[in-house]
Length: 457
Image (cartoon, rainbow, N blue to C red):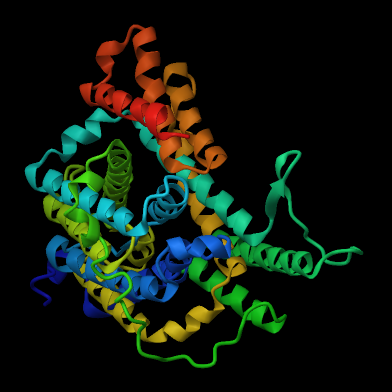
């Protein structure tokens, strides 16, 4: 094992790798609660929840997808990087594909599987570099920032900190329950909002202090505080057999063989969006973590083909299990900071995700107030890419700004993406820089234009 993971070459040992693996797991563990919450539509009205997969099955799918993806990265990519269903991609799945486009969740899983299959082909054939060069940097950064704002907005809404308002569309929710004439529902909403704010403050303080696993620890503290004040149910037990995977396992296959469902402009938009976000998220994460670990050689990632293939196969496996796209996690930097340098770090992380399956009863503490701080903090981290946009060049800045703005305001990641990809080539042509636009961008221009003309109501 030491030889396979090149311990001597990397200057590491079992103790350091095990500590790093545990650290990475703790930094990623919040996804075990947040992903099932998002994909099951837990924050949506009761009449809509029937359109989403069961929370219990998604929990099992999430843990298994994370374990499989991380172990693939360990043994194939041999990198200290954990994988799990990605934030942003799960929001796109729930709030855009299923809620807005009204695509069945089983068909959405088929879209995830198809996008990851394409990703695998691109990784194996070496086309990845050409595609990376085709998409302008400003739009890459804008997509990440826009998804960050969208996720943060969902967190604020779920917590009741931001509420609907007929006059202004949105407004600040009730943050106190001492007013007269408040209904019991308003009182409960106000208490949950305050609990979420408490959790957010705790998490921000932990992150400011650079505490590893700050998001996970913040959720734990918020849960305990919620139990003390009676807003969160106390678990009746700690250990139990994992929930059945039957409701979601293989659901994607219902549509993978149906050409009439897959080969439509609507599904093309879904597949392209899943592919685009995962492609650049994985690229940025793998390079960023490897750079921090000192593993890059002349600026290039060793065994990059294997690493990207591991990411793609993990996404395909996750779709079969019943979860949105599985991808590399930037939280892996926590493990690298703790000394992780080899794939053995990921082995430890993957095994811990398997162990986590048997702690399912603890999921009873997952409420909107508990998950909201995690969503908001992840939004902050993703939105940080906004500083890399060339704001002094209007033909770059406006498409990027439109992409960022439209995602939260239209409650749709696809709409924001489409807006930016339509406007970008138009402005470049008007500026006399048509040759600077990659031919693929012109193709996407017509695809997204068709989306707005024929599919948007």
